[in-house]
Each structure stands twice: as C-alpha cells, then as structure tokens.
Image 1 (spheres, rainbow, N blue to C red):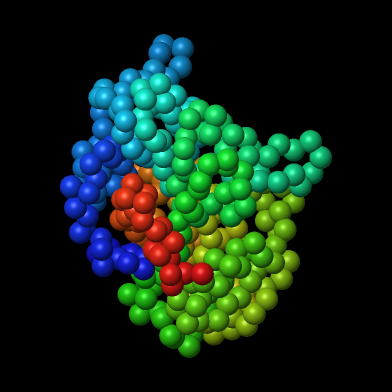
Image 2: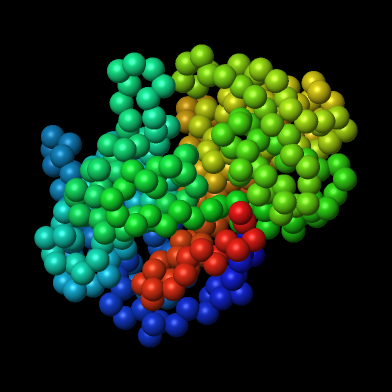
Length: 335
C-alpha cells in the first residue's frame, strides 16, 4: 500500500519516455532507498563505486557518462554522518567535473541541522556550514524531507524543494480509522513543532495539544507544561525526528499522568541512536510510525515500529523537477 500525498493517483504512472536525460545515483548512505526510487521512476540506478583507501579516505569512481545529463544524487547524511557528508561532496565534485548539465542533491535527511542558530556564545551554525559546503561542491538544487527548521532553506544559494512527510503519516492514521474520532488528539512535543502538529490535526480533524519543554543540555529534556486537555484521549505525537527517544518517552509519561489513555508517536526520520529502539519498545508508547528516509537495519527494528515508504514521494518530486512541473501541488492538503 502507498501512503501518499495530494496527487497520489499519479504514482506508478510515470512514463519512461518522459525521463530522457535523467540519471539517478545513490551513495552508500542509503542504497536501498535509491533502488526503490529508481524502481518507482522506471530507470536504472547509475553505476558508481565508492570504497576507501587504506587510511580511510573515500575513493569514488562514476562508472558511466554523465555529460549533459540531469543528475540526481540520493544521499541522506545519516550515520556515520561525517562519511556520508564527505561522500556526498566528493560525488558532487566528480559529477561537476564530468560535465553534468544539472546536479540535484536529494537529501531525505539533512544532518547537522540541529544547530541552525546561535543560542549560546561561540556556537557554530552547522546547518549553514553544511549548506555552504554542498553549494560550493557544485549542487544546483537541493531536495530535502522535513528539515529540522524550515529557515534552513534560506541557508542555500540555490533552489531548495522542501518535501513534507506529514501527509504520508496522516494517510496512515486515516487508514487506521483515527480520523474524525472524538478521542484522538495530536500532540506537538515542543513549541517549534506546532505547525507540523496543526497540519496533522487538520488532516485528522482532531484537536491539538502542546508540550512545553526546555533542554538543559543536548539529548536532555525537562517537561515544563502541557497545553491542552488530554484526559481520556488517545494521543498522536508528531516530530520531525526521533534520535535517542528521550523526548518522546518523557512526553508520553507526562501525557498519561494527565489522563491520556494511549500515546502513539510518529516522525519522518528514525535516527534511533544508541539503544533508542529498545527504549521505545520497552516504553509506554504503544506504536511508533516512521518513514524510511534513513536506513533501518534489523538491529533498529522492533515490534512496535511501522515503517512507511518514502520512495514514491521522492520519486514523484524528482520526476516533476526533471519535467519542470510543480512540486507544491503535492501538498495542497498540507499547510
């Protein structure tokens, strides 16, 4: 089953003849997703070899001509994040020197995004630094899914297509019969995520609640207050990513203390650092729904986890970019 977005009726109807001049490549970060996108588009994944020299340096070779082509590179900056990012930069340099007509970086997950502004003295803005590196290496366009902060789009000096995973998550909960139910409430785990939660709430025709929290240090959370009435409600918490799982688990515990009967959670990016998978499985969270924007090996799978495909969304965006069609119409129902 495809959990899609507005215009999902076009999924699977892509014509190969429309994609002349398009070439799709994937680095080592998430080769499986690259193959799924290629299958959706009905094209072959381009030949590319990326290995390492004995000292750990990345050695890359593009195995086919890219001259004059519209090249799309799929590479989330996932763990090991530094290797993934460096491999992406080297791929961009290789294709730029191979005379590709246009280079589009498809980053399902944009790493180094959590430092998007200076909060304390002498802090870097890594989200801007990574944007500068990508543009300097030769990218003409960037595609990303659910950036940690929407203002990151402005860090690039090239066009950015910001895709939303929310409609895919929302369609799943609709199909599970959770739309227009009196006992369903959508919860934002922080103030910054309110627009995302509001959009899902409108999709499910449900009210919204907000968890106000503060972070005394990275990956540490203190719950300050819960805004909204969650008593007797089944809660759906939505966030852009789940890293260690601490915020989600602590938020779920507080929601149940306030009278909620069940807490489910969903996100676009399942980072699942350390023992996050086991923590979530052992927690009071009843269900975890995510997308496959990041590789989820068997060690990160657990019974409560449901993984939804992102390849149709990415594939449709790639097709529309190549054909100079609108991307925004994919999200007419998600504002």
